[in-house]
Length: 190
Image (cartoon, rainbow, N blue to C red; front, top):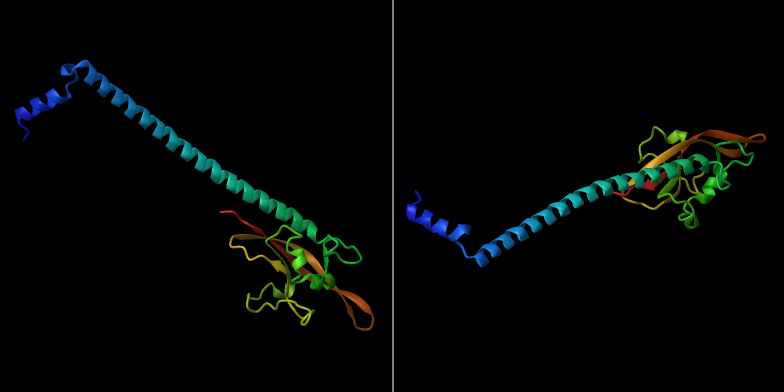
């Protein structure tokens, strides 16, 4: 239990009415300084909270714009001169042109994708280990044309279906076509 003497000593020490004016003023100044520090800390924390909300929204918007840019590019990529079929059919990719683009270092920075590849319909139901990557030695008996891959950590893949055609010869020259996927990756900022 607290004694009456200790209560009296406490009241004498912290009772502002019994203190001289200079001590009272110092205590009031200290109270005001602590109040100002508390207000500044409050607004700093509120500002950091608002900044984090705006930053998260800005990153989401940047990723959304990157994905939209990739999507709009992928849709039109099949009609570019590097891919398009000779007879200028819409959304047709020439496999004979495509095999010449595989692993060319000059195209790594030509498009703004983190990866670019084309998969034949024969590989749609295969696992990653069963898919045969195309090169000049195994073409046309392959499944996937990897134009380039920058191997980024966070990547969102965007795809578009295309017609994959190549010229073959039996009795006469003819175009052999199948369905494929043109897949481009975009780096996602986290």
